[in-house]
Length: 141
Image 1 (cartoon, rainbow, N blue to C red):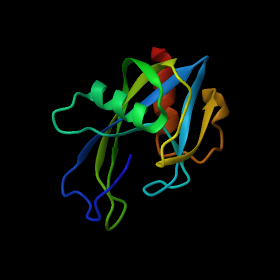
Image 2: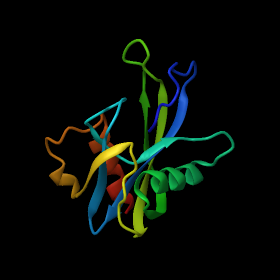
Image 3: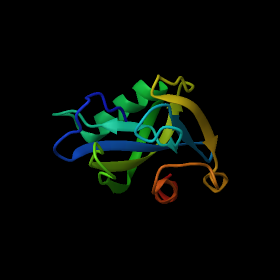
Image 4: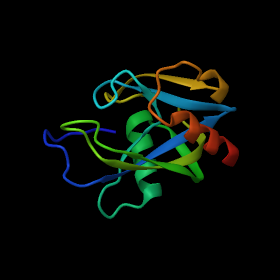
């Protein structure tokens, strides 16, 4: 998720993320910049005005990873409240998805990726709530 403006939004922002599964493993991407620099997360980002949640997820996954996916269903949601001055307020709708084609090609928002079985995430530095979202998504795959 990219924050491009120097001023934080004055209202909550709607975002999407995708727990993308391939051969029993989920894709995690490591954020290259704030917010969340150095943390592994799911691909995703803000929903644009007039864009459906599914269209936003397909667009974000394509922009961030170049993958083609099949969305299977909503696996949960998470609210991120401002942690301090300049922090953002996000409502993230998380979806379970299945890899369809292409290989990962990261954009400049991320600097690493891993395909991991959910039980392999362990002590990896991940964004809050990620393991719960992945567990819920796994039940839909």
